[in-house]
Image 1 (tube, rainbow, N blue to C red):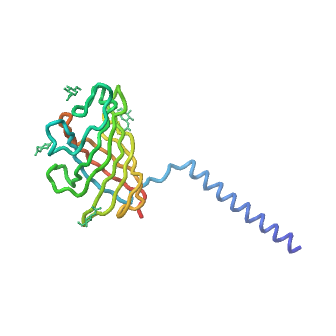
Image 2: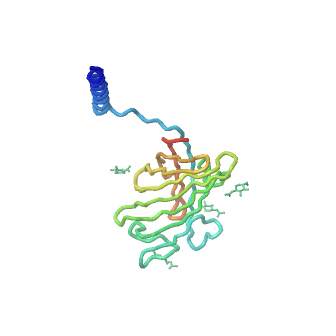
Image 3: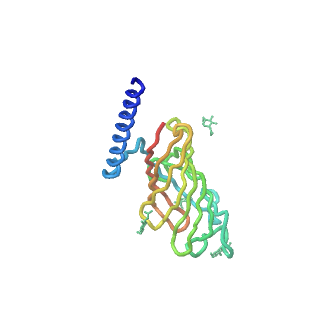
Length: 192
Ligand SMILES: *[C@@H]1O[C@H](CO)[C@@H](O)[C@H](O)[C@H]1NC(C)=O
Ligand SMILES: *[C@@H]1O[C@H](CO)[C@@H](O)[C@H](O)[C@H]1NC(C)=O
Ligand SMILES: *[C@@H]1O[C@H](CO)[C@@H](O)[C@H](O)[C@H]1NC(C)=O
Ligand SMILES: *[C@@H]1O[C@H](CO)[C@@H](O)[C@H](O)[C@H]1NC(C)=O
């Protein structure tokens, strides 16, 4: 008798649990997902000056790869398809190239489409100041014709240990094919 009643109780508990989780799933399907809010938000600018054969002192980036027929002083035709650029760019808190840098943006971009202007970015923000120590790592497609582009924040170290989120890029300035400045609005959704 005791065995039968405890089996009955067990059945009740199991069916109640299944029922409530079933309702939770239904609610999740019917309701819009809850809005997510960043746990941390940071805005920086970085400045890229491409070596063009004349600005060795000033340049912060170099063309290291080019398609056949191109060269390493001028970005190639066909939307620069096939060019690979390595950079070590100053990061500033405002949009002034001459502001004191708070870190370096280090990595590469490559142009990866012939018919439109688009790139792929892989780089880190490296900080070693009293304000921030550590790095934030970024990767993703950068469709340059869009006013803003979202790329992934795929990780971090130090103050940004295990960081993950989205960085919204905006081309804040563009001077010929030598200088550009990006505004980077970092929204972290995972903070430790
Ligand atoms: C590099 O290529 C461009 C055309 O894309 C050309 O105008 C320029 O003269 C070339 N420079 C060198 C050093 O070959
Ligand atoms: C960071 O800065 C400190 C103090 O200036 C210096 O001792 C240290 O070597 C720097 N670390 C890196 C990785 O540059
Ligand atoms: C970029 O812009 C195009 C055309 O304006 C749009 O269709 C596309 O969704 C945008 N992509 C991103 C990643 O914002
Ligand atoms: C360095 O390059 C930038 C972008 O082309 C330019 O605005 C700036 O005046 C240059 N600075 C020097 C010292 O040449």
